[in-house]
Amino acid sequence: MKEIFAKEFIDFIDKSPSSYHAVKNCSDILDKEGFVRLDPSKECKLEKNGKYYIKKTSSTIMAFTTGEEVSPECGFRMTGSHTDSPCFRIKPNPEMTVENIIRLNTEVYGGPILSTWFDRPLSVAGRVILKTDNIFKPETVNVNIDRPLMTIPNLAIHQNRSVNQGVEIDRQNDVLPVIGLINETFEKEDFLINLVSKECDINKKDILDFDLYVYAYEKGTLLGAENEFVSAPKIDNLASVYAGLRAIAESRHAGKGINVFVGFDNEEVGSSTKQGADSNYLMNYMERIYISLGMNRADFLTAVNNSFLISADGAHAAHPGFTGKMDPTNKPSLNKGVVFKISANQKYTSDGFTIAVIKQVLAGKDIKTQNFVNNSKEAGGSTIGPISSTHLEVDSVDLGIPMLAMHSVRELCGKDDLYSLKELIRVFFEI
Image (cartoon, rainbow, N blue to C red; front, top):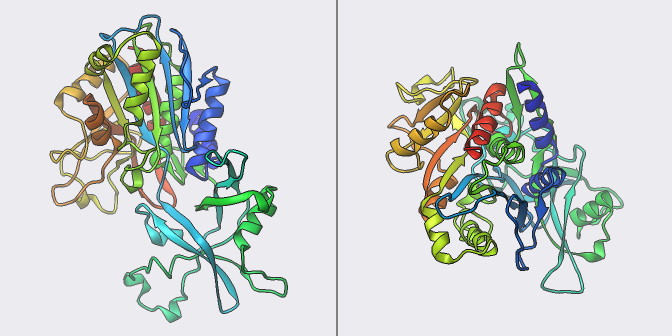
């Protein structure tokens, strides 16, 4: 079962070269599971014992189920994650020609480990925006040039003798992918748009603009002597997205309250967008749900105070070559369970109270947990947990699967932990 789930997750990642594709794949799964898509620009008509989902800017998705009884005392059971990963965004007018070679001008998105992107097959995915009769609602179309298209070549060691002692990478010059050679038929103007139009069968005249990103073309895989590891791009944080999505789809609603899964965009760049966690998107739609079910704002605010949020994001596993980077007494290991993420500086929302809640949720279940606390000399990352819980004022816990090589172009996690995270969230939804 765990290996099957891991293979399904790898397939999900392979089909999700951008956050737009990840959300489309989420919606396809929800459609198959009988969830009804809602139009946020129209009034909601909801029923009890219902299953629904909505999307925002094609890169954020929220799914929810309603029980037989929906009352302020029941509140919301929520899990949140993020759909984006560190990468390179392609700039407008990206074509650059130097020494007969065509490169694309890019901007670093988030905090990738830049060196891991060199010398591997890359491609382009994202969305193009097409003209329509309604100028305020142009059409968005996901695009993926599904073949090895380009690479970022390293400088030869003979011209860079100190490379193995560590070399600073220039974000404007050193990480621009090579996409082709100039020939007799080369037309620099709209080179990329012409390529996207041809490869994705889209009329170039209809393309108004684009949001395109570089992604690693190599597919994810199981590896290890016993297939115990998953090696793939974007494990941070599509692992949590997939686990939360499958959990809400598989869970049997306990008959009370409302269960919510949400995958936000733009966490890697601070979440301060209309589709990010540092917006009122989740809070506003939760209130709309309550109003659609015949309750008022006072009921909603009471329900918020009876709610709980799981913020699910990647956690650091102890690296065998760098054990000194970990806290001396809290060292998560791969395939040893889901990790509670704890921070005195409130980088994470977990506290004694919220961890105790999850421990009681898991009582009697075969789901292991571990703790992660940063080494006091190391600065930790952040999650959507503190941001979302600030907007909602709800009790929240930060947790996730332990992993190695976080923010590398390929990351590594344990096969068993993936399944444990899904089961933890499923059990949480069924309480």
